Structures are given as C-alpha cells and as structure tokens.
Image (cartoon, rainbow, N blue to C red; front, side, top):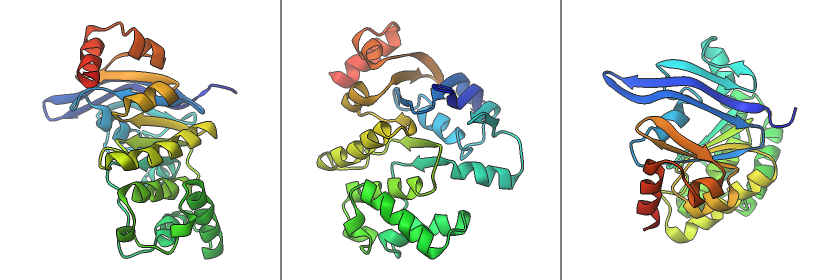
Amino acid sequence: MANRPMLEIAALEKRFGANTILKQIDLKVAEGELVFVIGPSGSGKSTMLRCCNRLEEPTSGDIILDGRNIMGGTSSDLARMRLQVGMVFQGFHLYPHMSVLKNVTLAQRKALKRSKVEADARAMDMLERVGLAHKADAYPAELSGGQQQRVAIARALALDPKVMLFDEPTSALDPELVGSVLKVMKDLKAKGMTMLVVSHEMAFARETADRVVFMDGGVIVEEGTPDEIFGSPKADRTRAFLSRVSG
C-alpha cells in the first residue's frame, strides 16, 4: 500500500531522572519518505532518533517498524530489528585496522551470516553506489572525512535496512566535503529509501525533504512541507529559530 507508515513513533517519552527529554512525541514516516528534523541543540532530536532503534531505551511509548512494535520481544528480536534500521552518526565509527571492504562486510557476515563471496559482492555494490568502489582496499586513515562517512552509509545499506536514520551526518565534515555526502542521501531518496534525518543542512532540507519537523523543548512544535516550514512557519518558536540559523 502506497504511503503506509514504515516507521511510527507513538506517545514517545524519554526521561533521565527528573529531566524529561522527550514529551509525548508522535511522528509517522511513510515508506519512501524523507522526513527532516530541525531544532536547537538540546531539543531532543538526536534522542528521538536513537530511541527509534533503542540505542536509547524509551521511558514509555511505542516504536512501530513496518507494522511491528519493537518495544516488546526478546534481545534476539531487538538484534534482528536493528538490522532493519540503518544508522549513520556524526562520527564514522569505522574500524581503523580494517580495509574499507572489510568494514562494509563485517556486519553482513556476523549478523546476516552471509558468505564471504556474497558479502563482498554486496559491499562492492554499495561502495559503487556511494562512489567509492575504487577505495575498497584503502584504510579509513587514507580517506577524507566525507569519504569515511560515505563508507559508513555503504556499510548501513549493505544490511538492506527498511529505514535509514541520519544523526547530524555532515556536522563533523569540512564544508567542502559536505556535498558528497548530501549527494548520496539525495540519490537514496530518489531510489525510494525511507529516511529520518536530523541535521542543520537547511538548504538540503528545502530542496530534498518531503516533510520538515521542528522540535524544541522535547516536543514537536510543528511540521509541514519545506515550503510551509521555511516559507510561512506558524509557530513563534519556529520563526525565531529559523531567523537565527538563516541570519
């Protein structure tokens, strides 16, 4: 069914002691949709993203992936679910002592039990997709930050995820390297990947997102199309934030 929710966050709360970071968050991401989350530091954006694959354990609420609530089940159920949710962080988290190819095949072989031949073939396909097949034998230290981040994307894609989560994927990169990572994300969108992105790349959000969500103080203040949020935001908090980041 077109436009069914691939990822659904329902009444999500996250507390650290007396501090409530997320307050009754409700958000649906349709299959093939790119939803872009913006907001000031400390608004709960990254915590929400990390709750989506239970890297952060929600205090209450539900996370529903492809129709299945991932808040119950066993640890092996959780491990299987995590394979379906690709996550790309601000840091690249590549193994420095392994080649690019081995970085992209390791989880495939360990978690999906793919043969070396199968894992290598899938890795090369994904490295080709991010424009780095020619770097398969290189080591992370020999790559630029933008190249390392593209390897991290290839590694996540090689596990055939249903959803990709991006947490500030370009914030650690030199400005001239940002474009190569955003191009890969744009290509993923064109190929129908479901994506939830936390980032400060406002021009990219305007151009590529289907929907933009503005968070502040642990709540979703408003959401809409890029034209609605950037062109005529309804909430004072949204207007104030956008005037600061564009000014």
